[in-house]
Structures are given as structure tokens and as C-alpha cells.
Length: 350
Image 1 (cartoon, one colour):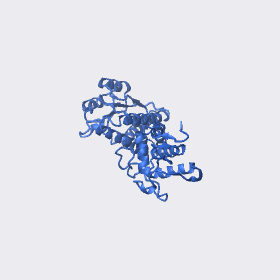
Image 2 (cartoon, one colour):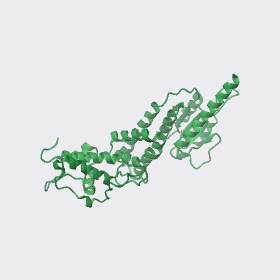
Image 3 (cartoon, helix red, strand yellow):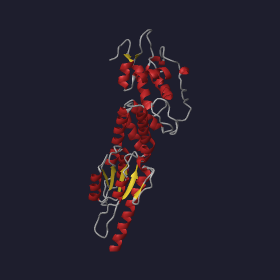
């Protein structure tokens, strides 16, 4: 509850917003959005109007707006909430803000603008939505992440959202985790869960699969736990109405062999994130697995997906796509060729 005289503490407002107290103090120091009234000798106390201002700051930065520009808009929210539009003694004036406030006449930030300090992640040149997703992830703001991912998928489609928003943010979190001990492990877990949820939602809402053609088998090689790139591929195939069997992480060699023999797939996609997990002998074995009736036996095309396969020439019967877009193209063409062959065969039989 609010103290009717003094407001609430920084710790309380931080818990309410889902950010750290350090972030709230940093916004006050750098962008001039501290509490409107400061009692001499007291810690910061935040009024309802102050909290409304911080909520707007969170909303804007989560959508990818640079912090200085977001702070300018957030201060206007508080001004409109204070009778007469005025405000008492505030923190640093606008001129003292360490990052220049973007003029209202400046065009909206372009997708490729460099990430502004504030996400805590080494993003580099990325889309605005990627910056916003990173900031929401660092704040552990699940609802905002979910909303941003759904909006991006609706506006840009699966492939662009994966390549330009999801994957760069996941990579930035992974790099930070690897270089700073256990820092950001919780960020990676929460972000991965929301990305996986968004991808699976695409898969289950895709068109019904009516093809009677053999499926595409998707699996991580033994000891490989990274499934999100395969989940993105599964979602893309589902969007196209193509039959898919997703076996997930660390599929044992014996289980993969059984899955291939039982399903008779058109293609098998094997994901390897690191060279230590790439199993070239297994890939050759799968590529050489023939099935079907005697005299018309076929073997699947094996796609070696992921950076773990780099550095060696693909064996016969295997191919190495460079990314999601190319993998979807290769698999789609296989099914198109299969459909064309069946149509020609049916015409001949008629």
C-alpha cells in the first residue's frame, strides 16, 4: 500500500515493476525520472504518479524504444498525472541526462540501429524488437516477452522473427552466460521457454496436415540438448502443412535408427550445436538406411543442421543448409518433387 504522505520505497516499486532496485536508481540518475518530491534526508519515495511514469518507462523500453527517448515520454505521463501539469523538485534536469533525448522530430528508430545500453546483453546491430525482447528478458518480464513474440510473428512471419529477433537475443544471452559464470542463467531459461512456447503455438495452429507422404524426421544428435532451432523448423514445416516427426533433444543412436526405419522419412534433420556433439558416423549411417519394398527401396536425405557440422565436407546423401530459410526451402522442394512424381505416375496409370 502507498504511504499517503511519503509514497513507497524504491524496493517496493521495483518489486511491483518486476525490475531490480538498481535499475530504478539508474533510471533516476541517468534519465531524470526520479520521484517528483524528495523529502530532505530521506530515501526516495514514489507517489502513484511516479509509479505510473516508471510503468510507462518499462512498457516503452520493452517495446524497443531507446531508454532516453522512453524517459522523455514517461516524464510526460507523470506531468499529465500531476494537477496543473507541474511537478516539484525532481532529480537531474533533462540537460543532465547522460544520453541525449531523441527529438520528437527524429524519425522512429530503424531496425538496424545499434543497441543502446540498458539490456545488459551484447546485442550489436539488431532490430528494435530484438532490443525490446532483450530488455524484457533481463527484467524477467514474461508477459511482455510473450506479447512481443506474438506481435513479431504476426507482423514479420516465422522465418524473419526467428532469424532477426529470437535467435540474436538467445545468442546474446548465451554469450553472456558463458563469459560471466552463472549470470543470466535464469534469463536464458525464461527466454527459451517463451520462445519455445511461441514456436509451438505456430506449429499447432498451422494448417492440418493432409499429405500422405512420408514425414520429415527432426532430431538432435546424442548428447545435444539445444532444441529451439529444430522447434523453429518444425513450426515452419507445420505452416506449410508438411508432415513432421519431432523427436527433440539428445536422441540416442539406437532410437534414431528405429525412428527412421519405422517412419520411412523423406528427410532426416540432425541438429548439432557444437563440434563435440556432431556425429558424422551416425549421419552416414542414417543416410545409408534404405527402406521400402524390394526393387524400390529409398533412403532419406540427411540435413546436417547447426554449427557443429562445420569444417567437414558433407558425406554422400547428406546436405548442410546454412539456416532455417534454406532448410525449409530444401524440404519443401523435396515434397513438391514427390507430389509431381506421384501426379505424373497417376496420369500414366490412368
